[in-house]
Image (cartoon, rainbow, N blue to C red):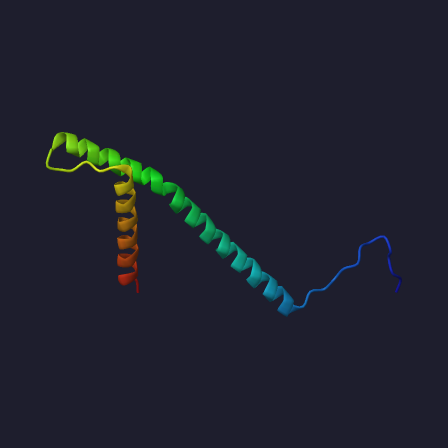
Length: 94
């Protein structure tokens, strides 16, 4: 049997190493998905707060009994609503 020096050498990977690599790749993909989800949620927070502030301002214009809220208050309302939704979702999860 002759050896062909024109071809690169082939390396065989054991099954355990292949499983570890696939598990590591899966962990990296899950970690990347968590990071992307956090970035999207944080980026959407100011937009949601601004829309809430505008809606409350419009309702305040129509009905004087409804208080107008500022941007900081609307950010806190959005954070509270998001936390409440998360706790409720966990409560009813199987």
